[in-house]
Length: 442
Image (cartoon, rainbow, N blue to C red; front, side, top):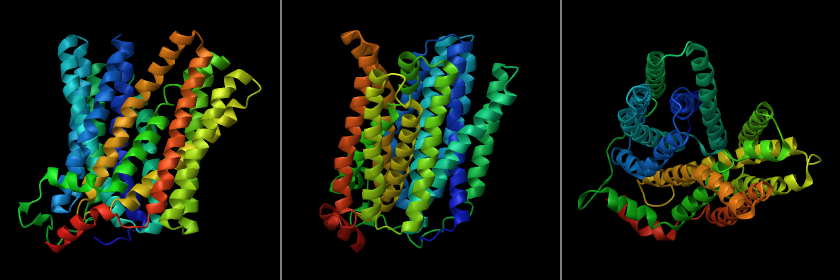
């Protein structure tokens, strides 16, 4: 596969990401609300289900290996999207079933969210590998921004549209709407990928011992120092990033006495900042023509430093009180988060082909699994830490401040790892040299 996909091709891959986001938002937002409000079930239930969908994504390296064997990603993306859609439909049926038979509905929901996690893992991993392979290096920052902005667009459009047609609410309507969204998403995915990926002349994933197994492929990739370090960077930085989501708005309400509407606006301001940060990296990264080393040092490291600094600002905001520029702090935090996140994805696309030959899918799968586990743990650890510190100290302000400090320290640790990675960004990995030569020789 030759790199050099045009802007329209990048948008086509972005439409796949939009489709993925449109299904995911139904399962993590709409079904969440129905379980808690209409069914009056404990909020812990959807929390556990969403966590399951993250933790199941530890299977990402296995899906990546499957796509490596045939050197084609399209069947895995489409198959993953189909599984994701089927899981979403099953989850909506399970939610409706909970109204009459809670135990059976919950049992089906557990299976459905495992399907959702596996679908996201298969389609998301292989989509990123395809994007990395087809997009020229100088366009990767813009491509990462475009695809992630289009995923956010999928969240917004689906939430708004479904919200408009879901009333008057019935469980049957919920199932039908979910099925329609899943069907549209799968159709858009198939059309977007049509003839975008050429079939390889031969499948090279063989050696003298026959077909390379997953354990062998995984061992080869885990022997690469840069792969392990980048996985650790992704885990630590995304843990800090995701822990903010469930902490920021309660902090604003408890410490600054913001109303629910005002705290929601504050959260929206942060998301607007994330969008600005992503666009900034897309524009500057494409225009500047930076080497991979300088790109990582400028945007990944800079975004992490900015995030750490602004989280420390939130840690002292409560002690300063109303004089602290809370809205400005949160907006700038969003910019730093967006810049770091999309730059990290772009760096991931650049690093995925470094190391053992024909293991791009496994490598991307390891990094995707690290991100998914971090997101699954982030919300749980962030909120649990607030509760624990508040119980130990008897102070809500101390609880939130210490959690923000911890998040800032995680970003600081991510800076150290990113600096080490940037110094190696344009050097071949010595640990992977022998396996790479062996794979290329077969």
